[in-house]
Length: 85
Figure 1 (cartoon, one colour):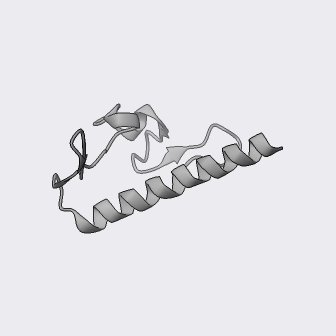
Figure 2 (cartoon, helix red, strand yellow):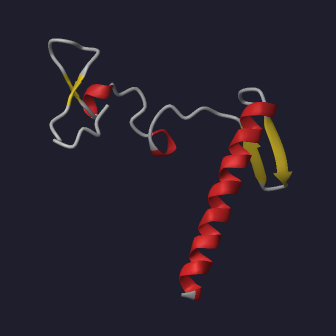
């Protein structure tokens, strides 16, 4: 039980600090502006338009969703659960 609580607390602290750091950067730094935190650590305001670390940038939604060929603004739901956009 203690191990699960520890893991929950650490992951929650990491998630909250990640969110707050990103929020502060977006609010206080212009695009490509940076802050030198330590001699070997620099925080830079960049935009990530792709998935993890910018992978799949520039790919259209057709790669990830089934686009309705008759209406290119709509997606078809083949999952049966209704969770697609």
